[in-house]
Image 1: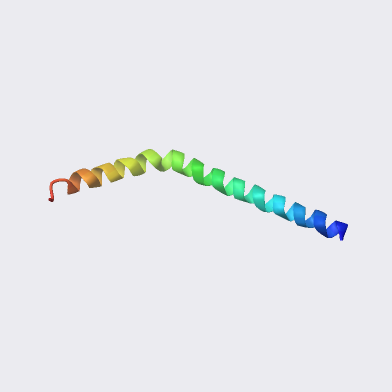
Image 2: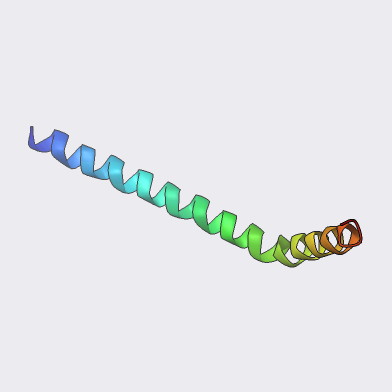
Length: 52
């Protein structure tokens, strides 16, 4: 039973590391593409601004 507890903890740490890597990847993608997406939304907002 002691071995099962250690393996369960190891699996939990592995899942946590995968979660950290995925979240860092998402943050990196948002940091790179964020200004482009913001610019696109600004263009759409200004285009729709005349339609009221």
